[in-house]
Image 1 (cartoon, helix red, strand yellow):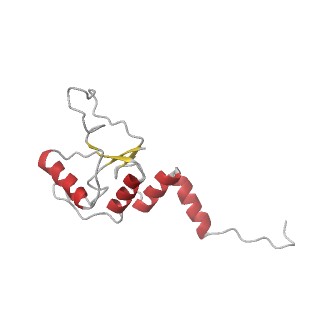
Image 2: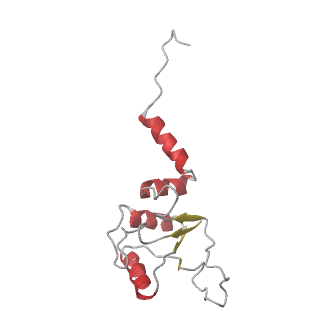
Length: 139
């Protein structure tokens, strides 16, 4: 699966143009996803040195991206890139989601178990509030 990941507000707290503090379990989850052979693409508004700094920050934490701000590593703007900068990703992880960014444990569960956020939350609620057992005289 190809997964596009935002940087600011998703992997780290918003502190642009600085690099914020890592969000809990972000890089650990990304490393686990790459170990499972998912392709990660860093998709960020950062450019130039700011983008290089973000990529290096991730690299120091063991997160290597398949590509950065493009569909594949060899893609060259204007040559084999379409007019649109829209990526061809299966999943997008971004803090600008409708509903915001779930925690990284939930994100990992959604990807690996192929479940929706709603399915996971419903399961968690049912685990927290199990249905009472019926008595033998109740129907």
